[in-house]
Amino acid sequence: MAGMTPDQSLILIGMPAAGKSTVGRRLAARLQRPFIDTDAVMEARCGQSLQALMAERGVEGFRAAEARVLCDLQPAEPAVIATGGSVVYAARGMAALRRLGTVVFLDCPVAVLAHRVGDPVARGMVIAAGQSLAALHRERLPLYRRYADHTIACDDDPPEVVAGRVLRVLSLD
Ligand SMILES: Nc1ncnc2c1ncn2[C@@H]1O[C@H](COP(=O)(O)OP(=O)(O)O)[C@@H](O)[C@H]1O
Ligand SMILES: O=C(O)C1=C[C@@H](OP(=O)(O)O)[C@@H](O)[C@H](O)C1
Ligand SMILES: [Mg+2]
Image 1 (cartoon, rainbow, N blue to C red):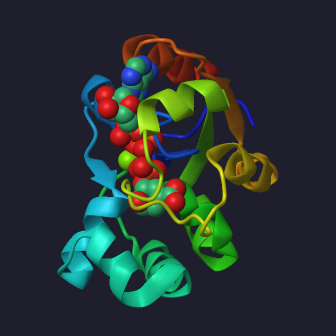
Image 2 (tube, helix red, strand yellow):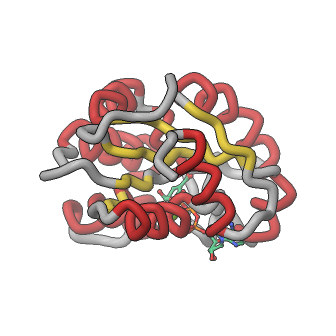
């Protein structure tokens, strides 16, 4: 898929700490579009922090709540949407997101992610007890690839550079 039409939202997926929220905010400013972070939408809707949600409902409950948020997302106008890293577990949620626009996968090496993330559990990630970040990355990579219209290699490049790559691949620069 080359470029995107003006009525489409731009949706960022990828591992936690890949830069979806940071790069997404920059893209929204550059494109003069609203910025939506599905993590913030979920916290507002559930009335608690993601960490509290995870502690109360567990991984399955968290994923179910996230899927409902994705299915109900209706931007008033084309937006830049940063998602939580675990959205790709929800097939129905991803189908809903894909109806809203173009999905871009920020593909960041696991070593860079590990440096940024610190302790996955303290960060409130959807991760099984004892699972390493590298194992989680292996588990999710096929899912990110399945849903991506475009993949952007991020390495450890600054957010502005990554944002520029996204705009170029979508012919929006
Ligand atoms: N391209 C980047 N280069 C360096 N640090 C980054 C970059 N993108 C994000 N970060 C940092 O990594 C952390 C996680 O970024 P964030 O945007 O919250 O990622 P995500 O939304 O994908 O989880 C933040 O501290 C942010 O400042
Ligand atoms: O990947 C994950 O398991 C998660 C990523 C977080 O969002 P970011 O990807 O924006 O960090 C947040 O949704 C939650 O802590 C679970
Ligand atoms: Mg984020």
